[in-house]
Amino acid sequence: MRRVAPQQLELELTRLETPAAPRRESRRGRDKGGTPAGRLALSPDEAAAVLGVSRDYLDEHILDELRIVRRGRRILIALLEIERWLDRNATVRMSLDGRHSEKREAMGA
Image (tube, rainbow, N blue to C red):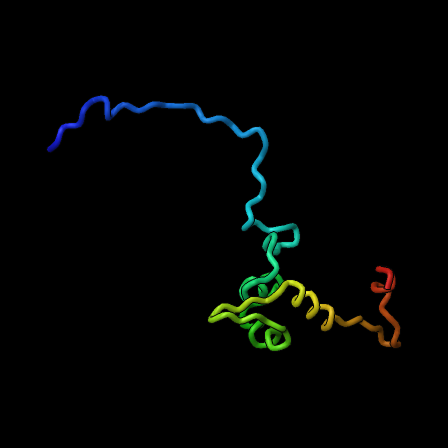
């Protein structure tokens, strides 16, 4: 077994300083809405999570209605496209007499 010189085994300890300001959120963080911050497009898994559905549901019921970007095996879905899809598929709840429900009217509709 080889012997090590004593000066090679000495450690110098230094005290770490606390940062003056908290770190900004990383680029991979999420904004208040739960979407990845600073992103223009999402993977299908991320899009399903943002919409609150499973990936299988997204594939079977939603993906055919979206404009997507394919590059090789990679699929990207623009956040604006998801918002457009939501707007196109939103319905107004009607009461039995054909008027908007009271809840909708209270919201300013």
